[in-house]
Image (cartoon, rainbow, N blue to C red; front, side, top):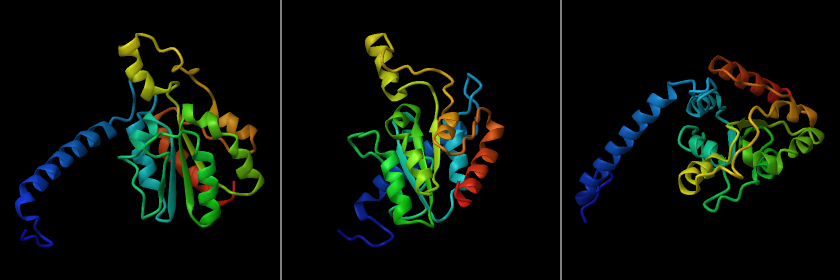
Length: 209
């Protein structure tokens, strides 16, 4: 094959088509990202994730622990460098987020560590906020709260006609849970609260909170 750094030879057409499809997909995502509210007047997860991406430090580590919310983050929140994204992996071993975030902060104390939780997966390791507080390891935990194991629910309803086991209590105040463990809680319910809330979280983390 006559392949150069600027050409894949006979695969040029294939590569071009892949890029065109990716650009089309990115345009679709951009349109959805610019829709800040869901139909229930909450915050659209794409909008939230796009704002997280805007405020990430260059020296940051993203720990992702969840299903639907983390799936959204995976194509809208971009790590700033190698070894800066940690997630449960292909087998979806939820619950690793708290431990991974602690380890990341210990390994790179100067880095800004973000823990992106689904509301379901947060139940596995949310108590590690207590560990963070006791050992002065400030991280920023963001919980995408849609009151469901949504990645499962989306398929379960059409397949089984029932959401049993997948629906969580609406309106759970995870910010208050964090405060109960000694952390600082920030409640975001409207699009115009997103960026100020994220910036406040960054400031708190910088100050060791």
